[in-house]
Length: 97
Image (cartoon, rainbow, N blue to C red; front, side, top):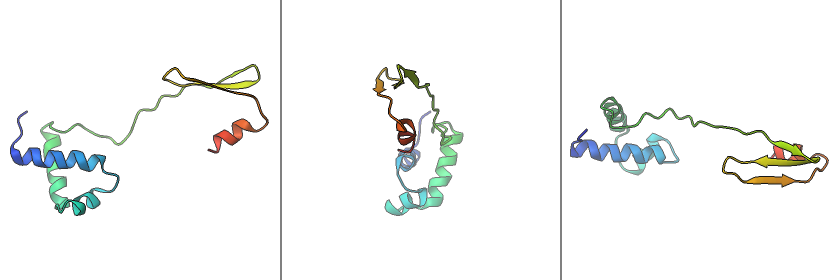
């Protein structure tokens, strides 16, 4: 889909606002924009499928820890394995980090 110059301008701001650590209102103030216009274009561009849908949720997958030889071994998704010796209360202390 081809965007007008104005739509491309607002699309760039909306994408930047999505990456911004603060609220949409904070982003608008920082860039001297009207927050209402951000919402209007966000809705309009999403309807035109020019913006990806963002639910705000991230899929998380977990792997089980494996206890080996009275120690703790954690296998991470990237293949890294972390082995820790068994120590009284170690698992509880790690869980609190």
